[in-house]
Amino acid sequence: MSDDGDPHAHAHVTRSEVEIPATPGEVWQAITTSSGSAAWSFPADIEPRVGGAVHIHREPFGPDASATVTGWEPPHRFAYEERAAAPAPAIATEFLIEAREQGSCVVRVVSSLYAEGEGWDDIAEDTGTGWGMALRVLRSYAAHFPGRPAARLDLTVPVGAPPRARAEVSAAVHEALGLTGRTAGMAFRTPQDAPPLSGVIDHLGPAFALLRAERPCPALFAVSAFPMDAATLSVNVTGRLYGPRADAVAAWHRPLWNDLLTRLAAAART
Image 1 (spheres, helix red, strand yellow):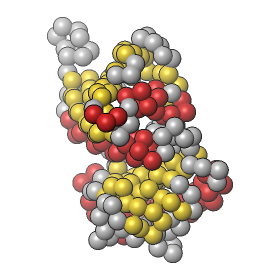
Image 2 (tube, rainbow, N blue to C red):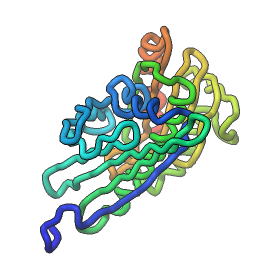
Image 3 (cartoon, rainbow, N blue to C red):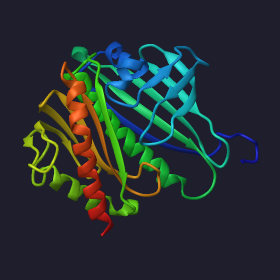
């Protein structure tokens, strides 16, 4: 604890932003409503007022979290803070939504991790990386599937490797999905031993791949090698599927993705 007793005295802050082809009101709905948040990120139940309760459903990537709304200024600012017993840090998250010309907006996320001691900078940096990935998913959702509900397909399998092995594990993930040598904007089709998908590569980077599928149904799949527990890597898939076939395709694909992630994790351990 700091000398003045202020739990916010030691802040590890990261900032992420993205421009989105949607209005602030449309983005606000995607961020602050249960149906909107579930269609691109963790489902969240939010009481719409300062002091209101927030419950974030993070399974299977981590335990559910409870927080308190600290900022509520529709449609431009939404903030909440998660408190936990020591030594776990308090985490404050702030969304800032700024209108741009022609119906677009810039969305910024400021994440502040309040903790003393060593090692928190790396965890804060991973949190910032995670928000950067999430904002890319939000942008694609707002651009291509605005307001549409989604079926969820979320899986994570631990690798048992340290975060420094991320590039190597990510390369194996990309190869398994048939993405090696390709770039964002190119068409893709997964290999025969992967879950059957075809569409467009929305993003391809060292942290994760974001695939915008057209077949077997419209969908977004974010596939990553990322330390979900802040300590060791796992291979993860966050799938959001849209349209009348979404539930059926999610049920069909779930064991196929689980098999792929399990094989990738086993290969990374050898």
